[in-house]
Amino acid sequence: MLLGLSTKNMAAETSRYSELTPFQWWESRRLRYKVSLVVAGLIAFFVYITELAVFSDRIPDAEINLFMIGLQGVGYLLFMLVANGFYFLGALSERLPHMRSLASHRRLAYELGFWFSMALPFLPPLLLAYYAVFYPEAWHQSIHP
Image 1: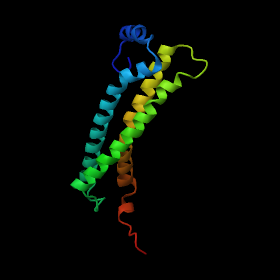
Image 2 (image 1 turned 30 degrees about the vertical axis):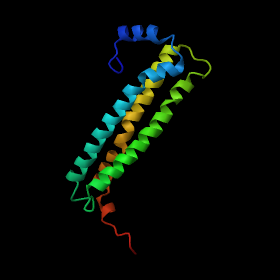
Image 3 (image 1 turned 90 degrees about the vertical axis):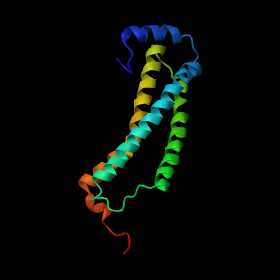
Image 4 (image 1 turned 45 degrees about the horizontal axis):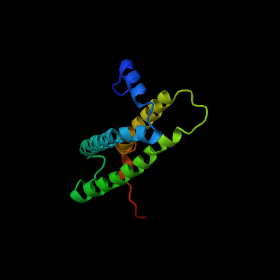
């Protein structure tokens, strides 16, 4: 069961959407993709804030203020713009030769792209935790000679 779809639901979806053009099929899922990106981004941001609080002794210069929140929000909006551009590659991938099953290709391409896109917002918190745990001295080094 992938993305909450049972085998029976997948079969019904396959027959219902098999007549759609690649653009129509991918566009029918874009809203779910966008909403999920927003949710993943908010969760990742709260994980990031929590890590800053937990590791405040190891990251002494970390600040959470409106400017930083706004800057990260704009950065995430740019990420979402790029992610939506890459989303369009799903429809283009259907032009690949030697495709056995259009329905299974669509499901696989969508799910791989979906979960990769949902994981990317967690990369900054993951890197922050990694450096805070294994290299806490990195934040204590002076950048001045």
